[in-house]
Amino acid sequence: MSIFDRIRHADRPKQDDGEVRRGAVSGFSLRKTKTRLVDWEVLRADIAAHLANTQMSLASHEHGYNLLIPGHNPIAFRPPHNGAVLHKPAHPFFYEETTTLLLSFLITRFQTSLFFDIGAGLGYFARVAASHIKHAPSVYAFEMRPDRMSQLEANIANDAFGARILPRLAGLTDVHKGPTDIWYASSILFETRPDAADYRERWRWLKFNLRSGFNGTFTSANVPMTSVDHVAETAGAWPDIVKVDVDGYEGRVLEGALKVLVTHRPFILLELHKDKKLRFGVRRRDIANSLFDLGYRALFLTDHQDRLKCEVVEVRSGDPLIDRQETDLLLFFHPEFQRNDQANPR
Image (tube, rainbow, N blue to C red; front, side):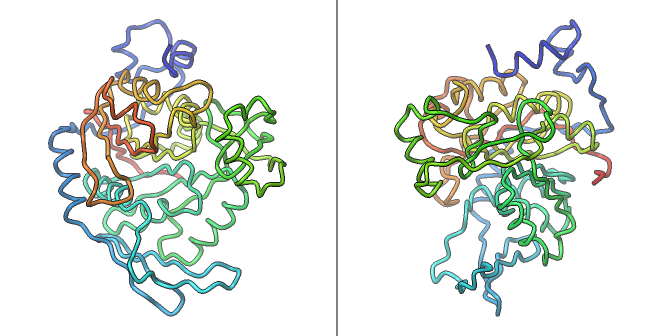
C-alpha cells in the first residue's frame, strides 16, 4: 500500500483516480493558478547546462564573506556569536552546490512566488531563495529545533531580503496536531519518547549518541506539529517549490502534503536518505512510487555537492538509482505544474 493511501481514502469522496489527480479533493479549496506544461527533456537539458555553466563565488568583507550567486543579492556569512573568526576559504567549498544552483534555476525558470523550506536548519536555502533579485519569492522556513530556529532568525536579521522569510518553529508530519512534546537528536525526530527498540541498528544508536554528546539522554521540546496541507489551507500559502530535508522523515512529511501535491503540483526538491535511515518501514522506492502514482516525474542528480560531477538523469519506477543506498537529491516535477498566480499572505 502506498504511503499516501491512508490519507487518499480517508479524505476523498467516491470518485475515480482521474478526478483526484485533477484536484477534486474533499475539504480543500482550489485557488487561481496558471498551468504550465513542463517538458522533461528540455528541463533535464537546461538544468544540466545551468549546472555546467553557472559559477558561484565568495567575496570577503570586514565581517566575514558574501556568497555570490548569479541573479541573487549577496548572502552574508558572519562569525558565530562565540567570537570565532570566520575566514573565507582559500579554496572555496560551496555547501550543496548542485542543490543551490538547482533551486536558483527553478525560481528563475518558473517565476516562483512561494518556497517551503522543510528542515530549514540555519536557513541556508531559505536565504538562497529569498535573495533572488528578479522574482523575490516569499519563504516559509520550517525548523523543529528551538536552538536552530534562534540561529536562523539571527542569520536573517541583517539580510536586506530577510523580511521575505517567515521562520516557523514547527515539525512537519502527516496531520496537524498542534503543540506536541517531541524528542530529537540533531534532525532525528520522535513524536513519542523513543526506547531501546528504536535503536536496534548499531549505526542509529551510535549516531544518536554521538549527536547527543555521549550523554545518553534525549533532548525534548514542545513545538507545534503540523502538515503542509494544514499550512496551505489555513494560511492560504500555496508553494511553488517544496524542499524536504528531514533525515528519514520524508514519508510522513509527504503524507501530510498529499492535497497540495494533487491540487497544486509543486516542484519537490527531495533529499532522499538510505533505506536504513528512513522511518516507519518505508523504503526509498515506496516514497518515489507514491509520487509517480500522483503523476510526477523525476530527475535524479547524481552528486548534490559538486555541480561539475553531477549528471542529471531521468528516473522512473524501478530504476536502480532509486534503490542505491546513498543520500541523494531528486527533483520531482509534474508535467502540468500549477504556478501560483496570486500574492501569498504572511
